[in-house]
Length: 83
Length: 416
Image (cartoon, rainbow over all chains, first blue to last red; front, side, top):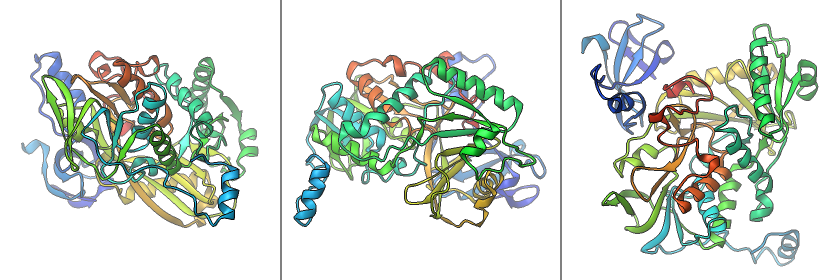
């Protein structure tokens, strides 16, 4: 698996660390249920998923990759800061 | 048909002509008291204990392909009960006790071999942690022995005791741990459940769960709809997808775990050894191949195959703990899909949908739990409430905060 870092170009998966699915952050004053769902519940899709990777062994930027969990194919990568 | 030495001799004399299939291929009926989704080890064990312990034999087990092709045949076959937390120890010890009597009970040779599980430690801090774990086990009535370096060396002479970076200072040994032939577990439970009247429906994939007025009343399958009094989900790896059919969102991510087997060798390792400085475990099958594995790959995946960085990591760990394995050829490797929960412990519980029960989240510790998982899940389904043994493995513990976090790494599934 190679991830195409928008800053550094395609790099080996070993250079990246994984955080997990991109989830919308609840408002600071949101109910406990919203925070519980954010911390613990996952859609866990079999197919494309948007997820955070950090290019730890390179530019150290946080990235958002769209990856297929069945084929491991990566469709798109962008900087997380560029949302 | 009862299997025995006399039967083997008798069949030998008459050209092996009397053997029958170990279970039926029944026609699907329209309705069952209990439908179990998932014909893996846990689903088949659940059906067996429903019939044996709970007196419910009007049960169907639905398997989307053929028995034994999922995770029950993809693990590294290790059984043990060397856990730390009060919510886990009694459950896994119950499992080990069921393993000890399983073959006689179901009249099937599952090659249960209590050859010992030896967890190595490599630092003073780790020795303290292992001593604590051993004490927790002994307090719960489980066997555990803390070994020094000399005892470990005598037991497993292949180990690199003097490794500069990860010297082996000793190990925590559970002599009652060991290995079981995993395919035979699926076949044995299937045969035993079938003999008690359970219908095992293969090539029967669940496509929907019918919920009426907040109650699960049946499933849609590729072989047509089935009505059910109660429904139990035992499809770890795919739990999120199946639970979503009933509108549930689970505290689970699916990850891929790889396993490896080497070419066959003469007897080399006579127990299960785990490397404490990383995550590596190895044993030798009766056929001679070394069976070993390490961590999960670390990212969400439904592909039953992993990537090379993890292969490299496992090979490095093998070389650190047993350098002589370096000349060995790996025969094959494969991957299985793990339900990774947010605290690293499984779930056996009711769900917010009435009549729907969940057995999921086995992370990569599901195989050893197979008998107790089936036993407790059968109890939970039949009685409508959890048994004391699985009370801590509840679905709502993530909301209440009563987590069972053995590794203490928090809500980050790829760290468990």
